[in-house]
Image 1 (tube, rainbow, N blue to C red):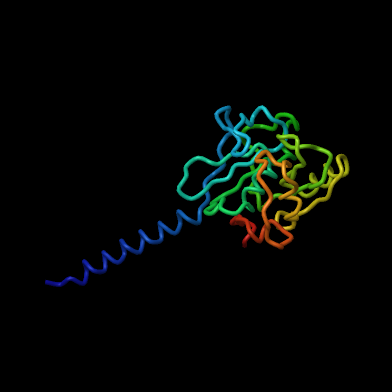
Image 2: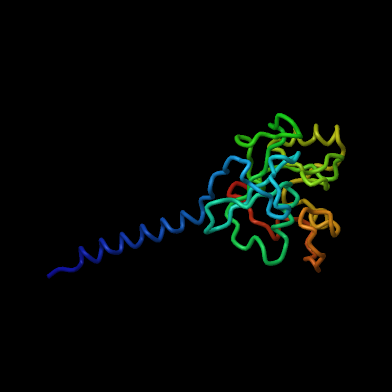
Length: 198
């Protein structure tokens, strides 16, 4: 009996299964619409009731995102030791497309965090009343915002770590301070998007 054809078919099936498994790890989930059921990871409050941009973070093995009432809290989550260990995707509101600061749309204006341009140090406050990292899909829109509300325009990888970590009580988490890495940018510890890593 000739087993060669059976072995060949078995190897093809295993190969496809392995490649399919790899594809599942590489392809990030799409962003989901924000609903009143979504509560902030740190504040545990209904985040649609808060102003400013929001963020959703997907982790491998979880079908639902972890929600944040401010983008800065999501970036804080990426830096906090022991959290964000298996992030597969991060989406933030593109505030250049937002209908208003008070109530950005719940769907349709999400952009990959690593592909966004940010304004830091502006006079606008995030969802929990703290300083924010305001994301935009277009650099020109970030620059317009910075001229109006102050602050600096930076890429994802150039957001200073000390701006993200801030002071005790400057986040919805009110997490106690820890000795943090000495790197200056968020990108060295955080998940990179498929577009930004090309």
